[in-house]
Image 1 (tube, rainbow, N blue to C red):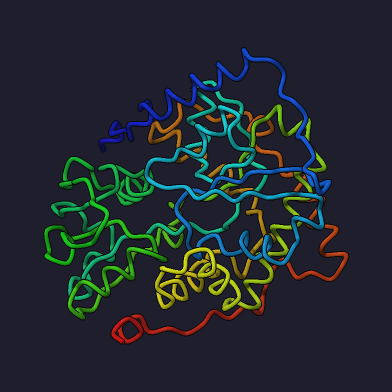
Image 2 (cartoon, one colour):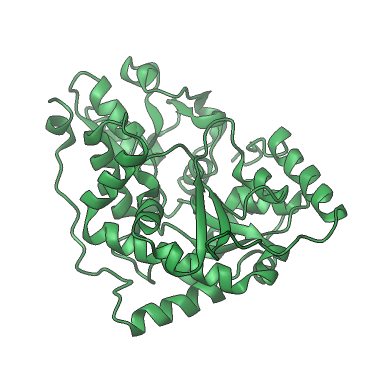
Length: 366
């Protein structure tokens, strides 16, 4: 079994994080956040991608004044292909960044002092899409001899799944996936990376009405945490009340879009009026399903998920070794806020959550 294939995380981006972290450490001590003219404390959140309903809970919290109620003047900055949230965080150019646990731990090993304060989504959105008339592909044990396209030409989730089903990666022809699903729809590959709230819909729209199917890494036990809220460790020690206020406001926003997803869509469209409403509605629904119902509560995951993620990341050399958990994760702020919200009657589990029922094959035809 070949498990030596490694995602190239010792890349320019990770090395840049290390360099900026060292630069930040060698500079003067960070100044306390300056109050704005309105008496609010400025706070910046850099997202992992561009403006879209994936982040609707944060947008709604801002629109409804939840951050302002906490004394925060929030600036929500979009990410994108040329934005490295963790690099900005290590350089002191953003206060909070949204990104994957594996990316965070790789940056920590490169010298950055980054701490997760909460996972935004409980479930991973990564999937593999295939044509439904190839049902044998649903069983990873049958992947030998297939052609697969993955972002960056490698994904820890895919490698972990192949390993779990005793399939040698050397027996799979793996290629780098482009930003669209054209190659998959033209049957250039058998399986392709797809986020359930994005490329899955692209494939449905672009594959001429052919029936497709998904492989869900969550169901296979090989998903990873993709969207964690991460801060600089020293900044966290200096700003505990600011962190609590941010988490309280953000959690209220996500509770609102669970109960009123159209509010999330409308608020997203106000920020990005050129975005297609149907696609944002689809995305809002899929994002809610990544959060609700929550097995442990909003903005957290079951304890065993941390160990499972770390073990997977070590096994496939995304990181060299398991971290000291308390050095890279501090859930105490989230837990305090969650207890306060629950005491006020907030439902952080959402056991009765029911997503919208959308048939993508007809929904995107109009």
